[in-house]
Structures are given as structure tokens and as C-alpha cells.
Length: 200
Image 1 (cartoon, rainbow, N blue to C red):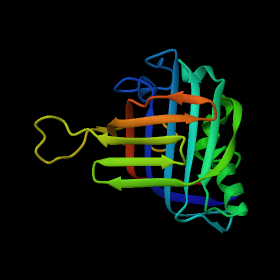
Image 2 (cartoon, rainbow, N blue to C red):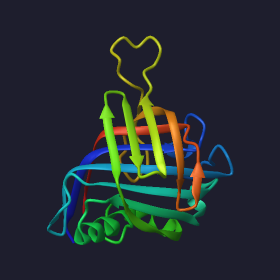
Image 3 (cartoon, rainbow, N blue to C red):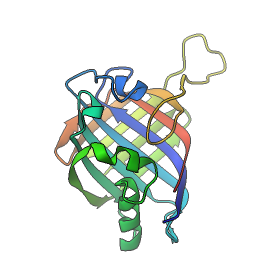
């Protein structure tokens, strides 16, 4: 059951800037729900001997106001170029069946809405990170550079409990249209990282 994935990551969610859930899963969301789209640009990796380098994946979630209450609704997209074997391996990783970070949140999932192939575009362009998945997801987030910071370095969130990483750039959505698996929302905030690294 050995696997590893490395790449970049972008997320947008329905909370106002910033998402309370990202600070602690037991904090209530801005509204009576938290809807988020987690997108992975896998630069290199293999799952049980199957190369998955260059593929992309997305997990979209709809949770109660307090995430630790469980009953999450979850759907997945995998790059349309994935073979059947790659598709099966990646859905097992992102569904938590093969251990690793997603296994930690798997007990919170109440309903799996399905997993589908789709064309996934993921572009990292400096502070901007854009994602397009078919005609159901289209968003761009921009890392926030604080007023007066001459280096141009974005705000960093550190020490987070999050399945992807513990450090992220804080970001806000510059555009957002999300309607997939019956989960519809306008992303307002976001986080990104140029490098996530998973292994199990």
C-alpha cells in the first residue's frame, strides 16, 4: 500500500475571507455550511506502482457549519486522460481508502456523490491560481500580498490542521462559478501552496 504524490494545490470555499474552518475544523463556517473545492496538480507520484505524474484531481465538499459534526457530502473529479487503473488508484487515495491524509477525514464523510472523469485545467501563474473543470467548475484565486510588504510575498498561514498541508498562502477568489454533484456556491476565499507532498 505504498504511494506518494507531489504537486501544487489550490482551494476556494464559500466562507468570507478567511474561512474559519481552515483555522480549526471545529470552528463554525461563516454561513450554515461550508462548500469547498480542493484541486490537486500532481507533478509527480505513483500509487502502488502506478505512475500518476502529470494528472490532476479535485475533491468537492459540502459540510455542515461545524465540519467536525460530520455528514459531509463529497464528489471527485479525476483528469480525463487518466487510464482506468490511474482513475481507480487516485479515487482510492482521495477517498481515503489507501491511508494518508484523506483517511483522517474519511470518518466525517456521510455521502459519496460519485467520481467522474473530466478535463481539468490547473494554472499556477505567480500569485494567481486558476482551475477549470469541464463546464461545472471555473475559479481563480489570488494570493494576498499585504499592504506595505515590499517583497511581494503573500500572507502565510502556518500550523493549520488540514489534510493537504500545514502551511498555505492566504488567497481570495477573483472569479468563481461552481456547480458540481449538486453542490453549488460562489467561492470567495481560498488557499494555495506551490508544493504539497503526500506519502503513505
